[in-house]
Image 1 (tube, one colour):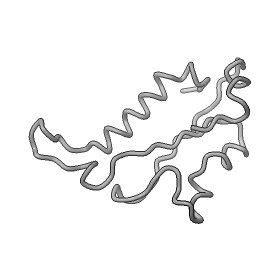
Image 2 (cartoon, helix red, strand yellow; image 1 turned 135 degrees about the horizontal axis):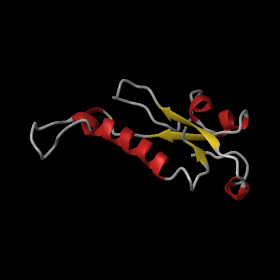
Image 3 (cartoon, rainbow, N blue to C red; image 1 turned 30 degrees about the vertical axis):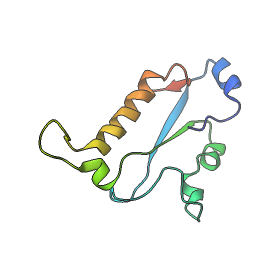
Image 4 (cartoon, rainbow, N blue to C red; image 1 turned 180 degrees about the vertical axis):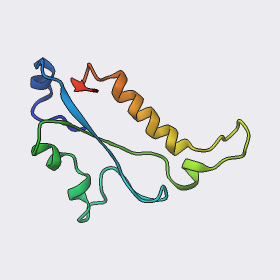
Length: 105
């Protein structure tokens, strides 16, 4: 999560900031929210994009490949863990919006 300026300054402000959530691509088989240290770091590193605007940048990692979708078709491994990870991250943003001074409208 990247919040522009200092966290102390943002938390003391009455202005709520919009939130940009980044979900990396990769067909649910590969990828990361932080880049790989190559040229794609420009796109995944929240410092650069958030420096152009006054918003909160949150990137989300989620389980990939069989770790994200393996199912035994019973309660032991229900599958869709990657989708659950993404939903939990979005729920966390809404639950903690006041703490991070986010505008969730």
